[in-house]
Length: 549
Ligand SMILES: Cc1ncc(C[n+]2csc(CCOP(=O)(O)OP(=O)(O)O)c2C)c(N)n1
Ligand SMILES: [Mg+2]
Image (cartoon, rainbow, N blue to C red; front, top):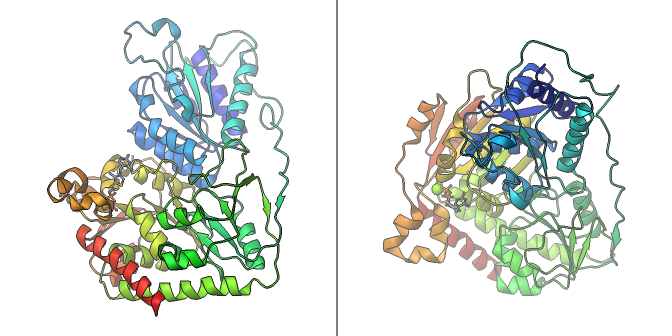
């Protein structure tokens, strides 16, 4: 057997032994040993994509939803550079990715040899760990090295306490394809059972005990862990729960879903300054929420990893791996006041949306409501996730996810595809038109690829609608060209080019029917950016007026 085949066979085998089930691959020649080994191993679910950027986001989605490391393979050269955005998102949102970039051997580097670039530490500080594997050689002792390296990579990617991407640069010298000879200088097998080694799991963290408090609030942002336990504890303590949709805590009696509008009301925010706020994950959607967070007497950030904790407002007074929320007597008035305000605000918001026809926040609200239990909803950055934040009513049985680590509008189709492939149940995505166009290649699925059950709902406002809510909207002449960026693309043709079922929704009443079907499909809702900006103003004003009454 040639060394390239031996290394690739052992790498894939040890990945499987470490629990990896999915490998995503983009085609190339230098990566042939890894591609062939992954294809030959029936324990691996292989996904092949022509575009490395899409491939990397598919891997991100798979890993994000499954919370397990997913391997990602490409050839040498710019192919590897196309993984960078997904690696950054994985780093920022703590998703375990195992990036295996094939490379030329050292003697070809820096010589102008074809498709050869400097791949050493290519992703800089965006990976938790980098290793140059070294060119495989036909001599005893290599197998132990390769297997132990893969175990370390899996352990570092999966955490705990800080999951994230890991990069192995794998240099292969020719020949790159199997020669039909199965012999090697030592056994290629792993030891009897399990992975080559098992890393010790981190000991359970000690919880921070806080004194009983009447005016406490639980805030849940992106990437929060142990949400159910904290929401239950907040319920016992009489604390309101302010959860972003992707935080996973927007359900039950204590959920305050109109907080964006409530906290945007100065009078309400002044009257509801908390003694203690506990934040899980990273809140980052609502400016009023972030401003109000800065005014908390005590702000406790819960972070599993004490070397990197989210605190975008720089208001943390304590950081803990876990917090024990105490039960306090007599906190009813605090919770009642939040809930009453939430009820009033929600009625005002719903009244605006119910009388406004098909608008973006209404589509977001209704979509989150009609999806069956057990569904996954992947949300694009820009307005979709914000509209859900502002308009979605509390509910159970719906899993919401978004790429909020770096909040890019890139790779969203592919991330949603990957997440859908790891989700046990129907999957949906709500994304903007520019977000769809940015990752058109994510729609390309070869005939032998595992197919997701995913309905992409695209809000087509012919450009970047978010900018109409920002100060630059006043700059009428340059605005449309440099921010609005209309494109006029007919999404029907786009769907046809990829052979996808396609439906246009004209009225919100048609939504449920349009969502039906299976496999990858596209639903388009056409909206208007200026009208959308007006609806957001109307919601804010309606809440303000209702609060005054
Ligand atoms: C990769 C990347 N490029 C640019 C941006 C800046 N950006 C944020 S929102 C946005 C517009 C998105 O438009 P669309 O997907 O149609 O959503 P809409 O704003 O209309 O809701 C842009 C360009 C970004 N976040 N990520
Ligand atoms: Mg748009």
